[in-house]
Length: 187
Image 1 (cartoon, rainbow, N blue to C red):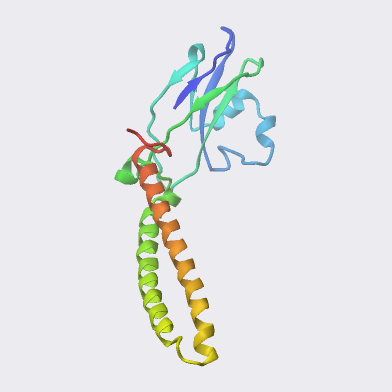
Image 2 (image 1 turned 90 degrees about the vertical axis):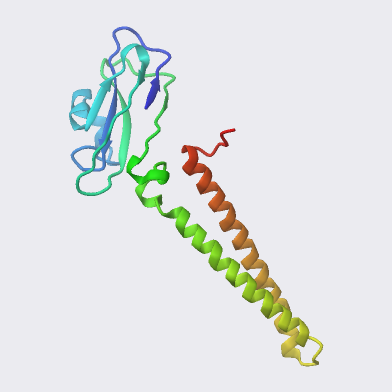
């Protein structure tokens, strides 16, 4: 985490708090958090760091024993003066996931799922293209059924192609995110 507080007085006491999704840590959107004192907030935190001089860069290891947890980062100003112009960046990684370290537990296998969807939609596209060729060859028949089936088959093929392209772009997006945790190209 990197925290930068551009306007901080010498007598201000600002902490970075790391909380998890357990009820005794972060109370959630109940509103109880607003009524806790700074000391109570720090006590609920799994870890806290004093931000000296308005700048802090930390690296910490989080261990989860029972199940994956949702983690929350909060700033607590304990001198009662309030905070202005707060800018901070938190970059969390699941280092045990290897190449998928940038993903949260619920998105860990998203790339696998979208690659599988690309394969399925590519197969659907080939089958539907073949069906369209067969329907087009039968269109010379004078039956209303063969003439009506062809436009619907083309619409279905178009939908399959659009979804294949969407899945392909999602795969690219996830690969880019896996590389650096951001949606930016690192050249």
